[in-house]
Image (cartoon, rainbow, N blue to C red; front, top):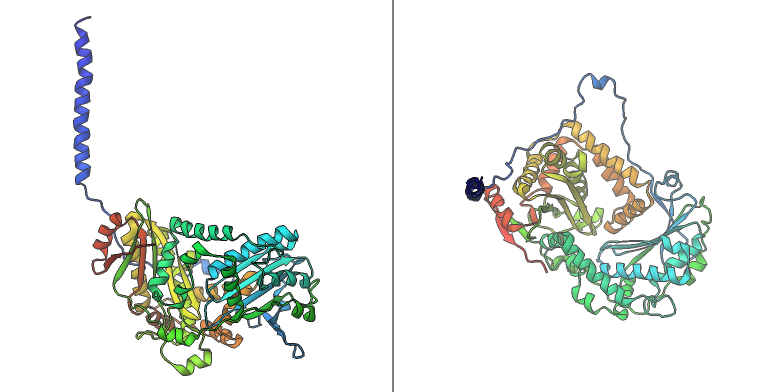
Length: 539
């Protein structure tokens, strides 16, 4: 028995030595193995043809007709000098409102600056939200709990929705625009420290969430001197913001704006509006501000020319890559068309580029139709191919940004690090395909159904209805212009769509990626050798 002891202890030592050798060999083998990234494939399109015999058993859907009636009716009172344009919800629109309680009245007070963007609208948004919180605590009015604010570069819309009389709701809304609303300690003063903290917190959250890529997108797309890039993200102001500065921002926005008041239709309960009383409550400006010249801004702005360059934002350790890829859309210089449609409908990229091929009417049509064709979620080309067929992403979407000083189409989504190159190539291949190969009539019909149906649904939602109307006002589109666009959409053909694609997707797209640069550069270099890679430093 004693002789067995050395043997019993020796075998485990021999096994341990053998296992160490095996592990060492495996590790050395792994170090020599080259990572194989996702291969690229030709673009794949969905079939919109209904196979036999299913077509004999499906009901006819009919043709979806776009709405021709206006969403709001304008009230004109020549005997009164109203400081706002009064809009009543068209009675036909209120029957199927999916977004509000029929027992409540929705009143919205909006300011619009069609030709010049508001200065520091992101700061003003946080301040107005803080004011709503202070008023809700001070007045204990349940209506203020329904406060909503929607801010864009050219519009600020404040809304309340509650069962109270419209005159009472109006009185609450005008308090936000009184000249002393932020500085008077007797009228629910705001906490300026909390506003500064919220602005700084939003900046950090954007960096953490990856939203900083959209800021870089706008800067690279428009150029640092474009008005849209000069009025946002004022970091210096975030650090030193005072109540006096806040009041100046509010008063400057009020001085340059057109005012619009949205009321429910006359059939609604408590919808009788006292015009004389509304004038007495109207806020008066205490300071005059010079109005900038929008034409001068556009002439001084030069749009960056895109080249075969991919901008990279480093996010070490990230497991996915965020992708932003798209085009600026410019105009063919046609002054007769611009004046007919309205000179405020300009390109989101500021001005006209030498390669522009579209007039103002075509910009709106191509921006809307092409972004939906490629990126309308489940039924878009990119989603179908890059997710459903190839599994490169959870989702990829298209966005049409049509603003008074700019228009652009952006495709955005995220993909795994190892899919980065294939994902970007897949998008580029589809953008090239739509310019060289006509869409099928079935796909065109599906696109029309989607866009017209989307427009009809937006009119059954009070928030979307107002947003759409404000967008029309900001871009200078009349109801006639909107009807003309809908008529062109109904008449859209495969050939016409291909023409729009060649005009909108001319030149090189802007591409910005956010991910682990060290891991994605080898794949990008392999799959996109003709593209130059440039790192972008984020503040």
